[in-house]
Length: 168
Image 1 (tube, helix red, strand yellow):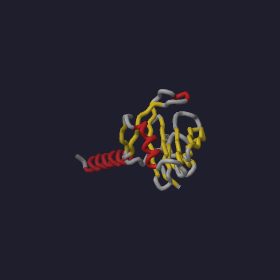
Image 2 (image 1 turned 135 degrees about the vertical axis):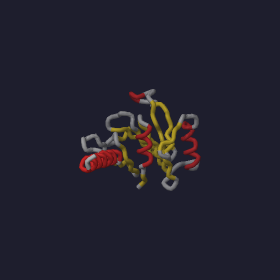
Image 3 (image 1 turned 90 degrees about the vertical axis):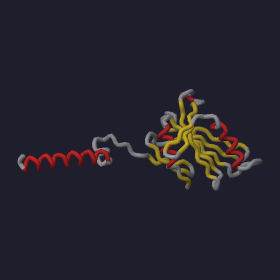
Image 4 (image 1 turned 30 degrees about the vertical axis):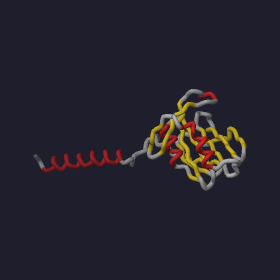
């Protein structure tokens, strides 16, 4: 074989391997417009990332026995929900007792762990999505006496949202 042919085959091989490496490393993501960017959502004293929602609106709010709870839905009402429950002025029981009682709805629910986040499978119980699966997770902040519950129609999106959640 001619040295030029061997060199040409070697260069082509290296180019193929380099191209495959670039694609698998994500260097070409978004080159053709398919890349999705995270939206940073800020509600009350929390922030989190999501891919599928750009804003949430207040759906309902309640104050009972020193517990202030606000429920938020995504702007398209497509099944993304955030509940922020502030127990800083709770009357009659401790924050931990309230949380333990509140979280009993998860006791017999199927769950999975995605990237370290426990995601529960429930069903939507109100609105036009009744009966559809909802993937729910929560974070409790004992210092702020606050529980944040996030649900969505996609388990991976719920995990992304809950894992990126930060308190201000």
